[in-house]
Length: 188
Length: 150
Image 1 (cartoon, rainbow over the protein chains, first blue to last red):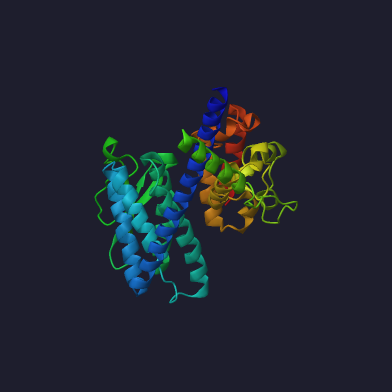
Image 2: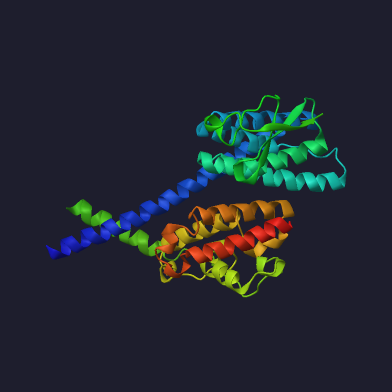
C-alpha cells in the first residue's frame, strides 16, 4: 500500500515536469509562426513612400486606440505597426540616412511589439518613445499629409505625439483629460 | 491498476532519458568590451546591484542554481535566459544604438519603479536579488543621469 502511494506521488511529479516542458515548447512554436507571418508581409508592397504612409496609418490607429482607453485595440494596432515598420524599405536613402533610419526602425519596432503585449499604462510609456522615433523618421522621409505635433506638459514631465488633425485628443490620458495639450508644430 | 504501473514506468523512462539531452550553459569568463560596465562609468554599488539582481538573465554569465542539473528545469531556465537576453543584454549593451540604449534605460527605470523587475518568481529563490528602496533609488538616479547624457 505504501509503495503504491509513493509510485503515485512520483508519477504526479513527473507529469508536472513533462507538462511544464510541453508548455514551454508550445510557446516557442507560436513565436516562430508570428515571425514567419511578418516575413511574408514584407514581400508584398513596394515603394518607400507607401511604406512611410503605412507606418503612419498604423501609428494613428494606435494613437486613436489610446485616446479611447482601449488597450485591446492598441495592442492590435501595435502588432500591425511592428509589421509595417519591418517592411520599411530604405534603399533610396543616403547611407547616413540609412544608418539613422535603421536605428529608428529597430527601436520603434521593439516599442510596437511591446505595445502589442502590455497593459495600457505600459502601452502609453512605450508610445511616448515610439512617438519620438516616428517623428524622427518623418523628418527624414517626409510625408504626403500635414501632421501636427502635439504636446501634453503633464504626462511624464512633458510628452509629445503626432496627429493628422489639429484638434487635440490626448493619447496619454484618454478620457481622463482628453483635451489636455496643445499643437506644438505643424509638419509639412 | 496495470495501466497505472505501465504509464508510471513509461514516464520514469522518459524522465531518465530526458536527462541526457544537453543544454548549453550561458557562462563566460570574459567580460566583452560591449558590457555596460565598460561602456559607462558605473558606480561600484550600482554595479553590485546589477550583477546580483539582473545579470543571471540579462548577461552572458549566469550563476546557475543546483536544479539546473535536472531536466526539464534546465530547459525552462535556458528558455527564460534566452528571452531575458533578447529583451536586454547587459553584456551587449555597448553595441546597441544610442537610441536603443536610451529606450532600454527608460524601460529599466520603469520596470524597477513598478517592482516588475527582478521578477518575483526569481527573488523568491534568490533572496539577495530583491531590491531595497534605497537600491531602487540608487539605480534610478544613475539611470536618469545616463539618459540625460544621451
